[in-house]
Length: 265
Image 1 (tube, helix red, strand yellow):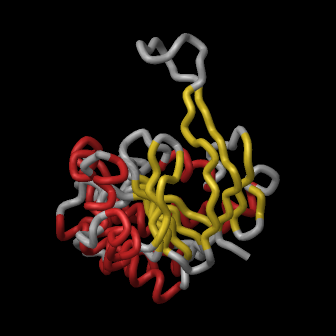
Image 2 (cartoon, rainbow, N blue to C red):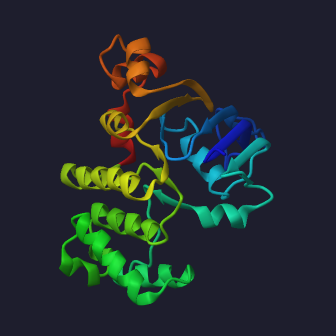
């Protein structure tokens, strides 16, 4: 059984408002025939320019959207017919973490543990352990989220995801906009999660070094299609003249991933 199977997946949207590039009512394609199978325990990277379909694919896997055509399965469960079973197995961390900003990190995590029916005392102990391991200052745990930096809020989002020991983590640009130290803390903890919990991970990122460090395989997406899929070393050798994943990405997409990340920050 695979952690994720996508079979010939298509998704399109009707854009809101007027657009000089599309006629009124015309659909815009976001994904066009995406197919891949991700073994359990793998860290699978998805790299692509802004608007290439990365986040749409993550939302389909997490049951937030439904495909127009094709099949998406998570540990054998069809996301269309068994969404509750899928949601019990996954947790998604996105670049824009959603919280009650007036409440503290601890209060937000207490609320999350209650939703999942976790023992409050055990969940609180576990949450504090994760936050401290990620480098969040102890005094910040009881501070309102609105007083925290973006990097600190992202660490709280990761702690929230790990409270339930998810089988599949969907990390949608989890380190975008973080300072270098926070980025290293998060990356190290992702490595620790794989070693300690055997979690399967999907990682969308603009950071080529992050993908090289963390991912077993990487798919490069452009215009809603996978245009390359292999190990970072193989992609570098085939498309980047052995000069690294960034060189391969530039050749395949014509885009600079550093500029994409600056636009997201």
